[in-house]
Image (cartoon, rainbow, N blue to C red; front, side):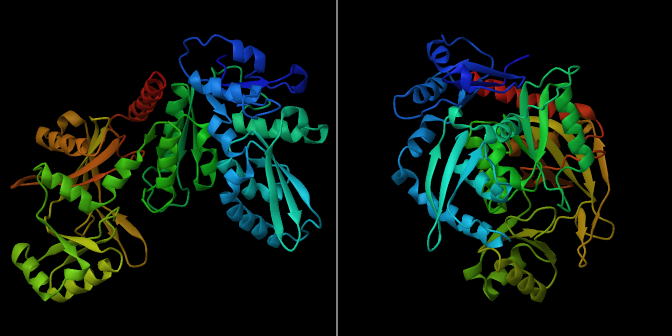
Length: 495
């Protein structure tokens, strides 16, 4: 069985637990071990007694980084927590969270107390949110917070502790927290080979129009099992756990101003492959950027005119009428799933729709109306076409999704076909457009009529729904995405 975590201790007598799948090694052995070639980095859990500068604990983390292993804590973490003056900036926010927690308690503590945080879990479940926040800032395996009461509750100190300080009373909590962090169950299924990699899929179970339906998420999990990738569905609340994984796939509608972007940024900072990456999200979620990029590269798009809130007047509307004519389409730059778009056919409606969109964005886009019975969607992964779909306009509507006033949605039909059966010009134009964004997973939307092929937009988080985009490749679509993650993980670790 490949070792996924190595625990480093100063003395073997400090280790009192039997957890299969963990390698326990002495600090002296690790420090004198000759670093050899390895397919993937080892996750090092440094449980030495001390982390002070030039101590054994310090050197274990330092050499782990030199060997391209992944230590906890890192040397940077050790430095950050070495003096209170270095981490004082984070205390006020933590104390506000502490106060909010205490104010909600029916029976709050009546005197100062210690709070133990092991691998992001708290020995007092009432403070689990505070523990998660502390662990997100200070990536230490074992921490002790001294919380004192005066006029207000204060965090007097945040200190790492050694394994030898885990008392008998804390022993079960330590084992539970460690098993949860490393995902080592108490009983293993001996019939299945252990996973080589861990992939997190970020999703929102309450999202009305998610990029992947539940059946598709299940097939991602099955593809992972087949390819020895442990796939776990995570949600917004799991932000502090992200570093436990080897890669991240976003299956929640992305936006720069919400947690999806923060997840992508953190994954990138942790050195793990993420689809889609922050740069792709920035580029795809703003149609102004996309229009500029496509225009600069002479890729065909519907005639488009950017509008500035501070320069939108009767003269501007006259210009639109001359250049685009009615009907025309107004778009907010970061709309998705056919939302944030208006089709207008009179000046009064133009002014009304512009006023509504300008309340949300300084710049909006006006675009010539180009009706087609369906839109092309070419799915592209790492510069290669993955699927080809025709999304048909919703019945009696001008978009592929009809968003009704009551909040309900009515999608049009679809036709999925082998990529090689789609028109070559459509696929080639989609590939050229996606290349302007990056090498992630994209859905390029195009229209085709007698005047040619036109790029409508590029989506960083395209739909992959069971029974739609996977209709041709079936499980092969999910396995292709999984294989791309494996290749990226191994490539990054061989750099």
